[in-house]
Image 1 (cartoon, helix red, strand yellow):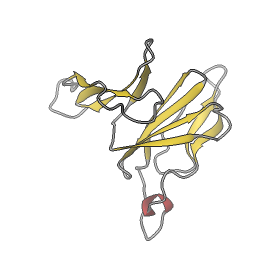
Image 2 (cartoon, helix red, strand yellow):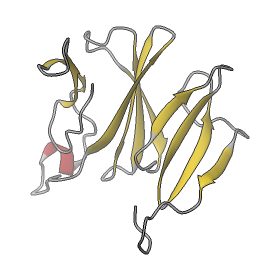
Image 3 (cartoon, helix red, strand yellow):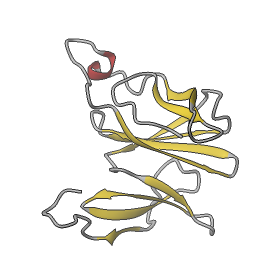
Length: 153
């Protein structure tokens, strides 16, 4: 399991449990997400309540994937590793925020990212899961997700 750590570093702890009651932290996905003043607490700036959000953990083809956003950096991060406890993650970045995203590895080998708030979208990722696929699927699958209200999530 992973967790949101917001402005705390190291960030995005990887946790393990044998009974889903007792949990232990076995590693972290990153030591420092970005070196901007807000994340390094320099020049009187801080990142309280920001930083990494809504991490998603997936495993397929002997590879672990963690994907998350950071609103302060306006980026979505994709991390990959074969050894989830080894603290050796490959990092890839997407410009922009893909709110509350999740990866879907389809049976046909295609990879998709679902995301959104208000409207839920699906976009196709490249086969290496490092970027959005050029000319891949990009569509709204649920146009309005607010229940009993106006806008919002």
